[in-house]
Image (cartoon, rainbow, N blue to C red; front, top):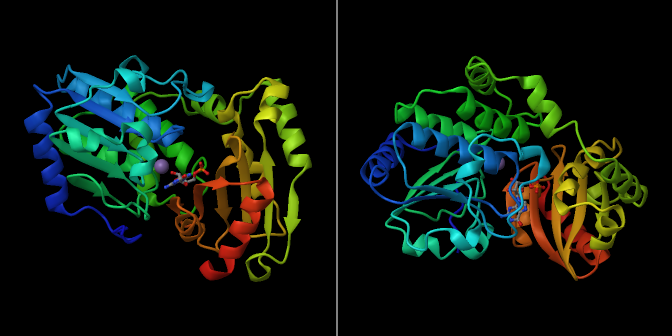
Length: 342
Ligand code: 5GP
Ligand code: MN
């Protein structure tokens, strides 16, 4: 059984002080391994690298950052400060003294690095998924935070690490990614206050936005055209709230010479379809295995749908690994939507 935290759960003062004392005790002399989720996005990489740079400012020298799976940084994040701390999964310490985990809602999202949980002396989890399954020794899981980088900044403050422009750029990329450029509902006054602190270090929001949102290869645009061209509208799904969905195969990627991560941006045009509440992109990972991205405008809790299908996420943005044909995946999702109306 999982013990998912409630969406409104926030870390207690005891959780924060446990995290601070664990880090103060183990980080100065120990090997510190930071891990974010497989297929890392802006929040995963940004919160992890921003925090790693903060530890480096504290004088911590034995630092590695990593994630499971193919060792490839999506082009939008290829200029992030702190990338020199990244090592491929195979080079990550097998028995670190301290494990710090970022933006990982469930152990499955650690991939082949899941064995580090048992091997480390202590594990501090920084996350903001309401569906977080509650693993780790110290849990800083804030279901109300817009991004994991909000939690990371809170912990850096408590460790008395001042922001510099490099830390700030990492945390800003994370915040901008997970709030959809400060457009989604969780864009609270506190989010803008944090953005203000980050921008005040001298970073360039225009440059960052262009890199992470507004730049893609010509081949990716053509790929998007193919994949969007086969989108299907299902107006009766979700008790009439409707769903739109499409899929992309490995063959589509090969035909246009594109890497899988370019598909992460494809949910954005799909979720703009006015006629429906739910949107979905089904992306082929291997033969008959699909990474599924879902979004809702508020009528359906897609996190609950994803959890029912073995994944997780947030109420309005979630995902899971699907099997069979794209049509099989769509039917599996459609069957769950009616049970999870908000
Ligand atoms: P995206 O669609 O952008 O890949 O993911 C949306 C949200 O769902 C993110 O918060 C992400 O962490 C979560 N998510 C996506 N795929 C999975 C999955 O396979 N398992 C779990 N537990 N969460 C997922
Ligand atoms: Mn996140």
